[in-house]
Length: 110
Image 1: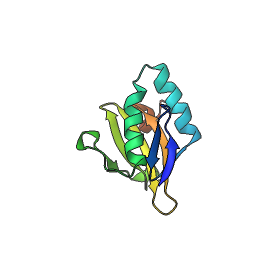
Image 2: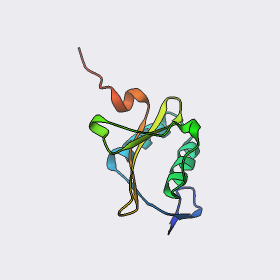
Image 3: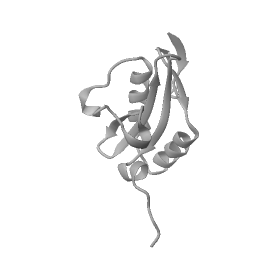
Image 4: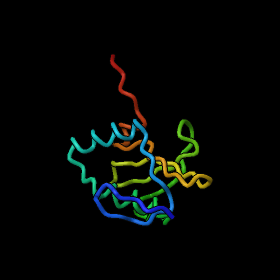
């Protein structure tokens, strides 16, 4: 177990150490600017870091393709979190967050 200070200023017992990728940090800034409730993300991250299973409403599932080895959950119907749990080193990698179109569709200029 690791004692971590969550981004909400509360000390929590955690099984996994949280690692935010650079891309995740940029995505998070974008979600804050859009007015998303970051406390919802905090609950999900704290639950995952504690090694607990997410409730079914978050639709947690494995991904394939470019994100093979990662998992995705729905914080809200159109707000996703892509993450990876490394059981060997006990790290929780926060890879991406955003809407479905932010994460999986590229905008092409015509």
